Length: 381
Image (cartoon, rainbow, N blue to C red; front, side, top):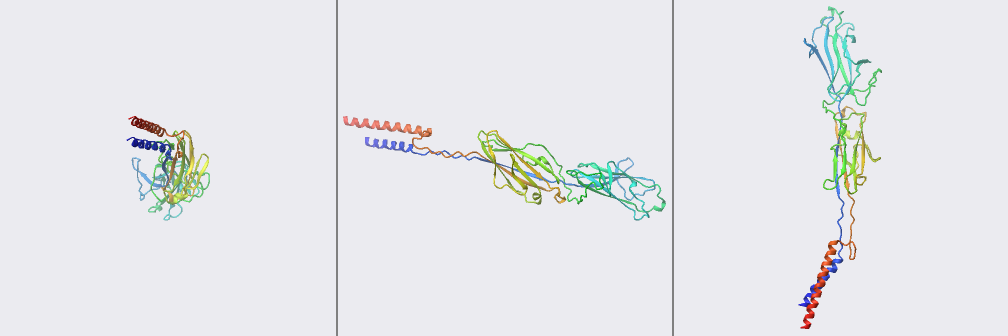
């Protein structure tokens, strides 16, 4: 019986000694968090309509009767307005007279009673104020029929033709003292009647590392949304504040992803910088495929990611109401905790193993001592 107990005691000591040589490995933490933002670009539109009305007996607008018969000396209520259906615009009007059925040049500008704020330059009348979306420029109030016209002109047709043009108000300043206030701008036919009211704002954007389950947290779903719709020649800028609110330092990286495939994306120019260092400068169709380190952020530190978007001035009507987008991805990484191996005699032995060694050691000594006493007892007997 005593021999068996000695074997058990030896086994326990063997466990005790081998426990002292176990290596203890701490887990390696490389915590990551990622957040993405889709940034959208919308191009505006220029579109107008030309409307003509008459006045009824109550002085209210009514449909104009193009076939009405007039008499010499009559003032014909003919109201011609240019309505702006899209983005703010400058407008102009060209007037031509069709008197082919009348002998001699009987029609000219002197017949026209114009609205305010129009100036004649060359072949056009230019409105000297920009016309806002939904508003109108009143061009013509009435037409005065010459009193000297005689019965010889009865049954003759007399026509006045109106042609209106518009050009964007943003990034364009006419020179009304020039013979060509619009500098030879080529007028194109509007390609769409669609229009979205531009909504600009001044919302702050940020990406912050908060740690825990939250990880990276963004404020703002579209970092381009403050701009509203853009027009040719626009140069707009914005910023995103990158920060660390966590107790431990964290590395934050940045990359982009091209998620659209259109001609507009190729035309736009984008520059991105952080802390004075340019990260990207080129077509918006390009991308930062390899993540770029924005910095190693200590608790409470921050940096500004700045960006500038340029819409080329030569962008023409085919891009009206076009849309495109790009994707930005932010990644946060906590520092890795290195592996740690603990061998026998290491003063940094985990307390759990130290406690286990002491307990097992005491148990082994007690059992050996008890066995010795039993053996001595047997000898005495």
